[in-house]
Length: 563
Image 1 (spheres, rainbow, N blue to C red):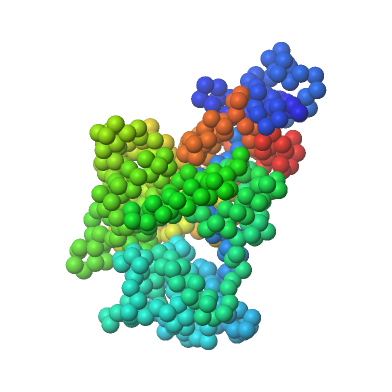
Image 2 (image 1 turned 120 degrees about the vertical axis):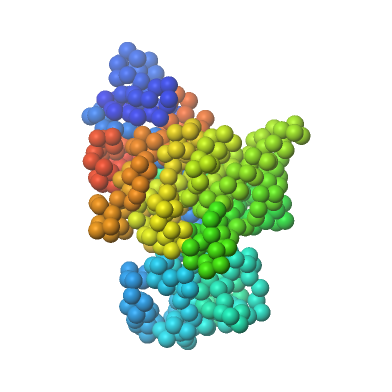
């Protein structure tokens, strides 16, 4: 069936034809995008097309969220939300009361989120403090940044973690310890997940986290409602997730193009993880689902003081602590070479300026070695976050073919000023600077990187675009007394609206290697489009988040709303 959407204001994201007034689709494909002149589009529409007068409404290509976490969000719905407070006693009173109202027999493991990352400073909280609220069962509190974790004594006991337990990745994925080597109850970088099976076995209970189509469906319904027609997964949470999405797609309930990613930890385990992604690809690929990317966490976060930085952290009395890094240039180069030979892409979590430099050095060395051996370079490195970049490295992504991915809703006050304790005022003000990279010609893409149901609403692309365009977080504004208008410095880092919409469409399609199929409204591409309530380019900057989606078209069919 053919459809004609005419009398519209269509921002196509096609560089050769950026604006159109009419689009004609046939089944799942665009066959015309151009002027609203019947003599031009009628020959494509024929006599039986459904014709819709859009009354001047704006149309965009379907949104692409190029880094988010459907598995983690789906698995988090059983978590308990903490009141937002900077007062540890208020938090502990809430935890204590909740435990009293929900006995151990009903909830054998209490998982709370979130406490402010800044609440306990660089020394962190203790298990003894959390024991004062809950001691009869494992209790866990997640920090706001999702990289620091506070647990009570019972949880450490049930995980079998003590002074003799080696840290999986010392300095990065580890349990904080006292002077005698005993775990303090504070841990970093999701290290507890390495011990979760033992925890659940010892308490004889498991949370409702088993991936099923029913558990995952709400996440994809959220994407559908918010005009997100394609996405890249931050981490595939095991084969059950892949199987569930395959089942949803086979039933016609996924309605999203999905790019799956498998995590690895080192060059040593990379071949095993490549075997996993090959198996997932063979079993679960569809028209809408593919698996072609590996994922590495290279460092931690600026807020928790374990990002890899070029100058020592300010809170280190010895002036030697430059954070933690998972691997140095040589090992990362070898990982890149192996991914290239396997025709796989790689995404790398990196936050500090040293991690960024190591990443660039590794890509440069890997590409040089491939050229020396007459091996074609096909691997696409995607650097995630890149919050702190030395000015000397800003032009390197464009030179080396590196894609930079930024989670737009972090651009304001979401993570506050916690990083200052470690990197100082000057570097804090230099964080989140992407315009020099954009101006240099590098591919920059945008995403939400939401990891829990608690923050899923922030994956609304127009909310994220507002924060990146204004540097103000409507939910977590910075102190206006220090920062006029709650604008995060520097104002020059505000990202333009045109850049934002392209980063969420055609640029995202290039990252996902689907640019021949989506990302712009032009003949031959998929009819994935959204109709929005306001003119994105004219609405006041502080109202971008209020733009609503009147209709979503996916594979040529109206999925939400009406034309």
